Figure: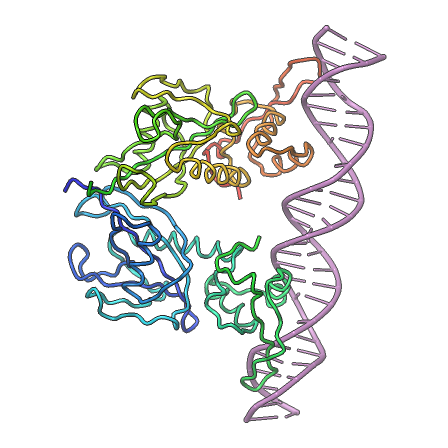
Length: 218
Length: 218
DNA sequence: CCAAAAGTGTTAGTGATACACCCATGT
DNA sequence: ACATGGGTGTATCACTAACACTTTTGG
């Protein structure tokens, strides 16, 4: 083996059942047979890195057209026992209800895992995941990436809950609302959400110009 | 050419004669013969990426043991006409007086260029440089990387001037001092710098624990 | 009328910015 | 005494964080 191999790995996050989850696939072969890993694959010779990441992701999840950001490039010579493999990693946060995991394409078994329950992954993927979680949480502070997880109309409480799940801490309701509304990226609608025995919540939508996901808001 | 090739490129900054400069080398061969480019080279099969960056840098500049940070990985398939070459880029800021540029090793002609005078570079290196400048400036806000450019004892005015040069804007003297002193990373010494017909300036040094360069200070 | 979540304002603290004058020295 | 750069304090503003009660609905 005298080649340097280049892969892309994609750390894909979602929020489901009030839990931050990451998409993992199970390895069918050695090394790390049966262990879970972050999905990814080899970059083709004529293929842009981000395109490759999107293609791999599409092949394994059916998800398309998402905003994706480069995370870091991991290149320890020992990270893959089969040879020299460097990996350019990407991450994203998506609405899991908008995709269907193709259960068995590529003979892989893709599943969402609560990040709190992820144990030993193959390769150096625990390292990659930890790094991605930090970046994701940090990115929440100054971008709109979280908004991709909500329907077009949503309540401020739903948005806040989302932030709390991803950040894994409680936020103050009044401060959260004040902050979000001051950013001038939300439009109040005349509709409201009635469900349960309590006061209905106003529904908001994003201003059109704010719909570029991942856009920086500072 | 059926291989994917991996290089590391290093954007090395310094401040000299009150100017922010970047280290460039001149290409001796096609493509982009005679144009300036960011120094770099191929990663060996058994070599860690950052190690490779440090080795390349050492071979071309003689500089050793520096703090270096990964910038981004560029992988457009057309970025090198000779084949598929992806590059993992690093950047750093160093004291140019501590190194000697080996003028002609590797048949290269390494020189410091004021960033304001950099014109068309080979490959996509203008893009890489622009990206590096942004990151460097941003990093100044919350790390101690700039401190590597100063002698052990320095005045606050020297430090401020350094920041102004890198950021390319004036800073308020009182606010700068207030901020820096409030960070609790400087120790006042009993010495002062006498030069010129004016009041001598107090000399400061960094607290030992702050001497890990590139360390985050927030 | 009770339970449940929605909605709302004020205060205190912190950090950023803007701004002008006196101080210590060499010549 | 004057020219030069060193050194200092205050007021305003914006943002963060802490904190508790009233409103609207369904049952």
